[in-house]
Image (tube, rainbow, N blue to C red; front, side, top):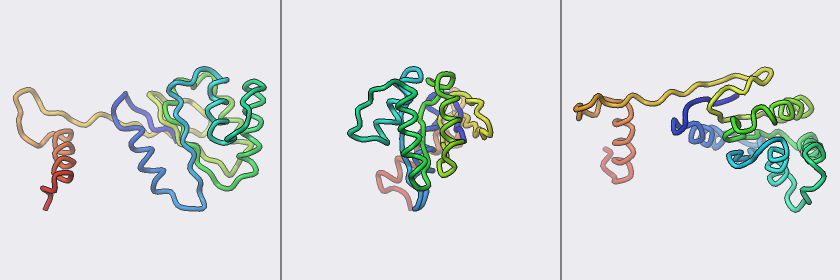
Length: 158
């Protein structure tokens, strides 16, 4: 599944909430891809999470092969790949191959756009409604949610 939407709409927050609600025996592995570049970066991010202490040499294909072995031998796992749009073209095929090879692994992606992976299901988030200029009511969704959080933090909620 890919959570899709513009920057700041809450894709990562929703992915965090969803992954926090997953129960054992699922293992959740978070990978932030925002600073990664190309296939080498995708393999390196996954390897740092799944192969701690391993030397990350050998190139992207070798890294992904080692990651694939760990995933294949492991139990049920959800890979959360945050900001996948940065690597969609470079890493999409590799992710597809990893998921096909490892039936015990699922992926939850966040992205500004759908990645077009085989079998991908996209959940599109839209920004909350904001008030019209000069409207000071609490009826707009964005204002109501903000006030709800403030009240909860300040202990004002009944």
